[in-house]
Length: 357
Image 1 (tube, rainbow, N blue to C red):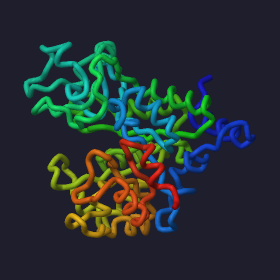
Image 2: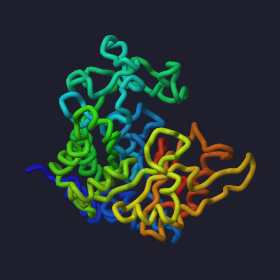
Image 3: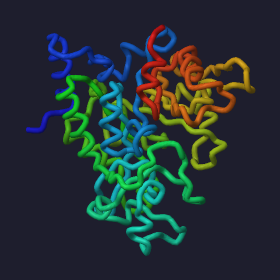
Image 4: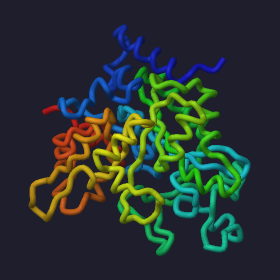
């Protein structure tokens, strides 16, 4: 019988408590409650660190290698973005399009759609498995988004299924005797429905096979679509911890009024179905101009008043918020704001910068 990830992490913590292993960076309570024991925001505890697409500042995003490195860095959670293949398999990729992070254009030049893009849902799992994953490029220019990241072109990386990733992290939890949880995002549920697929059910089916179904399990489930989160909670009856991802209206890529959602009243509505919010750094702190002190918004205070955790995306050493002086200053400002967690491309640096001084 397959063990759940939760039972494995409990085993790891029990073994560690017996003194047979080095001290774990994350407690069992962190994994079960999403950092409640260490990240109560206003009370000054240390936020959890979520490896954004793995240790993606060092290795291509969402590869097994990036996830293993993140786990070795002692992160609290590792993120999985999930889309579907043509044969309905949940795979770990950030976008429904796959030409920005793989060599699909070279391998299957005639399989692009009329808009010039290649989509995961047009390929079988076997075809996806034949692709090489690389550092992200801008599809308009072909240039690397982060030119100073992993550069060797002759190293092979692959795409993983969600089930493979869960098994990988569970196995690492046993062998390292540490507790690292999952932080899973359901990508573009409406778009998948237009393609005749239900990505949410596919994800929940995989999680159920690993007995991940309760709020006490070491997983957060996130989505930008509030309607889909309501469906997960009400229609599909999931008790998992849910995170409402909040974007910015200026991005123009959603049919949601995110500005309204970030108000105290909007956050109170979110709290009726979700356990936390994932917000963009400028929603919490901004630097009005170079050399200025950070200006904090009321979002963290309002979210905490509604009973919501606040996890902030995305900390990148090579892509700082506008006018922020340096990477350390961003972390210091988020600590001052009282956030409960951070998504980071450089999770080892974030862990170090978020430690109490």
